[in-house]
Image 1 (cartoon, one colour):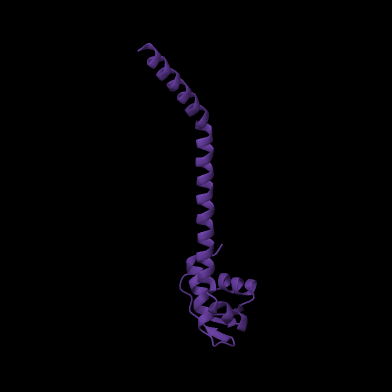
Image 2 (cartoon, helix red, strand yellow):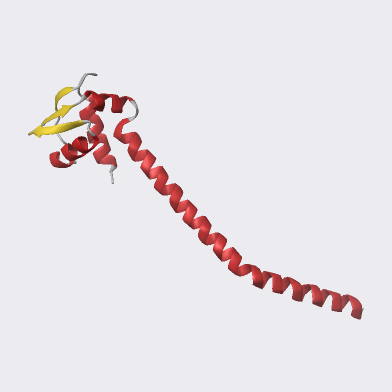
Amino acid sequence: MITLDLAEELDQILSGVPDVGGIHVHKVNKVSFEILGDRLEKDGNGKWLGGYEFQVYSRGTEYLKTGGYTKLYHQTMLRIKNSQHKQKLRRKQINAIRREPYLIAWGIIATILVVILAISK
């Protein structure tokens, strides 16, 4: 799973090179070089050369133009939030279905009592 810190670091690496790709020297703030390099290689956007140097492919610069890793992070968080809301909705619907027979029974009893009271007057 991608974190916001990782996404920001990856986008900084990708934004540090010209449109055709190339070598970029980047001092990492919060994430290790290995993690950044592994993610770039996994996605085919670049690789870690060692030290502070990253090689960014032209595909990586194109990826940044479409929103980059930060956009991916926000989409992932939105997807997770939506699935959590769907699970909450399902639980509420199940609970409502479980209460329904009791409400029907209570409605029948109340109706019978009202009819009995109306007849007795």
